[in-house]
Image (tube, rainbow, N blue to C red; front, side, top):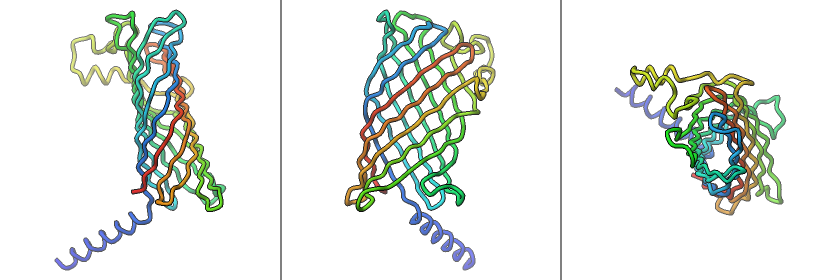
Length: 255
C-alpha cells in the first residue's frame, strides 16, 4: 500500500512540474471575414461577401513543443454578379503542433496541422437543392516563424502556414443535398461510409497562412492584431471552392 501511495505521489509531483514547465494561453479574436465561394454543382459564378466572425483558441507552449487549437465560426451573406444571394456558414477546428529542433534556426519551428472544416451553402433561388455542404478532415505539414522585439521584448510577431495533404471528405451529391448513398434504403452507417472520399494531394487543396502581432501587458496578457487566410478546393461528386480572409483583433489570457 505504501508503495502505491509513493508512486501516486511521485506521479502527481511530475504532473505539477510538467504543468509549470508549460505556458498555457486562452485567446479570443473577432473581426471582418471577407470571402468568395463557388459550388460548380449549382453555378460556376462566384459568390462574394463580408461579415463578422470570431475565433476561440487555446495554446500550450513548452520548451520543445507547442500545441494550438483554433475554433473559427462565421456566417456570411454573399451575392454573385447578378445579385443572386447565398448564405455561407463556416465552422472550423484547426490544430497545430510545432516542434523545436536543434538543427533549425532559433526562430523557426516545424510540425503538422489538422483541419476539420464544414461549409454550408443556402442559395436564395434553390429549393430542394438546399443546403449544399461539404466537410473535410485533413492533415499536413506546418511551419512557423516567431520573433520578439522592443526594449523589453514586449512585442511578438509570428507567421505560420499549413498545407493539407491527406484525409477524407464528405459532401452533398451533384443534384441533391444528401450524398447519393443516403437516397437508397440502407443503414445510416453504410450510407455514411459509402459517402466518404479520400482527400488526395494535388486533387484536393487546403492551405492557409496566419500572421499575428502582439504586445505584452504588465500582467503577462497580450493584445494584438492579425490576418488569417485560407483557400480550399474540393472535388467529389462536384467541385467546390472557397477563400476566406479574416482581419481580427485578439486578446490573449495567460492561465
